Amino acid sequence: MQHHTPPTAPLGRLNDIVAMPAHALSDAIRQRRVSCREVMSAYLQHIDAVNPQLNAIVARRDADELLREADERDAQLAAGQWLGWLHGLPQAPKDLTAVRGMVTSMGALVYKDHVSPHDSILVERMRAAGAIFIGRSNVPEFGLGSHTYNQVYGTTLNPYDRSKTAGGSSGGAAAALAARLLPVADGSDFGGSLRNPAAFCNVYGMRPSAGRVPYGPSNEVFLKQLSYEGPMGRTPRDVARMLSVMAGPDARVPLSLGDDPAVFAQPLDADLRGTRIGWLGDWNGYLPMEPGILELCEQALSGLQAVGCEVDAYRVPFDPARLWRIWLAHRHLMVGGQFHGLVRDPETRKLVKPALIWEVEGLDGMTAHQVFQATEERSAWYQTVLAMFQDVDFLAVPTAQVFPFDAQLDWPKEIAGRSMDTYHRWMETVTPWTLAGCPVISVPVGFGAAGLPMGMQLIGPPRGDLAVLRLAHAYEQVRDWVGERSPQGLWG
Image 1 (cartoon, helix red, strand yellow):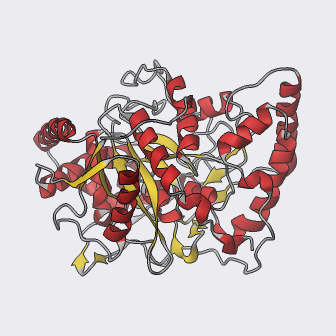
Image 2 (tube, rainbow, N blue to C red):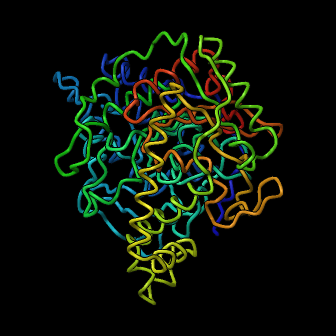
């Protein structure tokens, strides 16, 4: 894998503009207390100094062009035209989602020169809300695995320890947020790609409910139900405001939810006294965990108890080994189906990573009856989850089973002495909630003995996105890890 050699000289004091939460910066722009040009200039200067140390933002656009676009946003404001919450904010859409006129490489050599002719729905909405696209956030090849490295742009490093991974597949987005290279970010999540990098980089990442953010446009609108796009931010309020831009129905995605996304722009304050949280821990010993992770999460849960939540251990009434089999079948079906042609063509097969070949060959080994059985099993799990939310209001479980690992590795081969048999087995803690379509947010829970970040998933019932955001907001009021511990080594 390619690696980036970071310079050692830190930047000076952090610029006030890039230090601002996204919601505060958006308000300042709208009220014309700061110009879009000033914002863009501050961010570009900061990115020039810090991004070479991390390689989080790739495929950057020309600075003069970006400043001209910022001037256009200022002229719109002067004329009384405010496009929306992202007006004038720099954004770097994840390099898996299409952006008109920009390369969408998916971190893959086979697509390294592919210029998208159209915007994805997500990008349409960000563009309409006034965002200025400065480049792309880096991803693993085809978004596979939770470690952001590829042969097109290289490896994204962790802002808290540049010898470690930033996670993935939204690793570039999470690292950029932590390093204040972006005010807010978009990402996507199949196997934890909004959650795991958020945990590894001490920020918030939310996988919304099934259908909350329309995915596409796509030729697989009825099949592609497990990969969702969603928001990332340094505060739950920023995550919620970004979701208000992303969410809402679209006729091109018939399974999208029809709720008004404006609800996510409301204040998140709520009385949580008596709220019941079920703590899953390591699933009664089923999930191997590196030492220190469970302890950090349990300390974080005490913060929720401080705002009136009731936290009790909860045992899931479903065999976790059965869940893993369901996961593998769906993963083979959706990843293997999407990229089958690349693996079957001898010329392109030479250019793709082993994980993709493994997924395609896994699909080739399945029968139609096995696919049908897997969907029946997933339905049984969904009904079990609905019953679980009769017992509790939310569930909590660690976001990751390991702390950020060495960036030279492709993926962890063992955890606490237990071997990992697939490239994503070490991420098993996230997969049940993917299968259930629940809204999940990863919240920071602090730092382990080696000074590396960790997170915890807060899981709500299907379509309970607003309630999950309110819970995360209440948690942040007790302990603001993002504000307390920024990666100071990057800028002094």
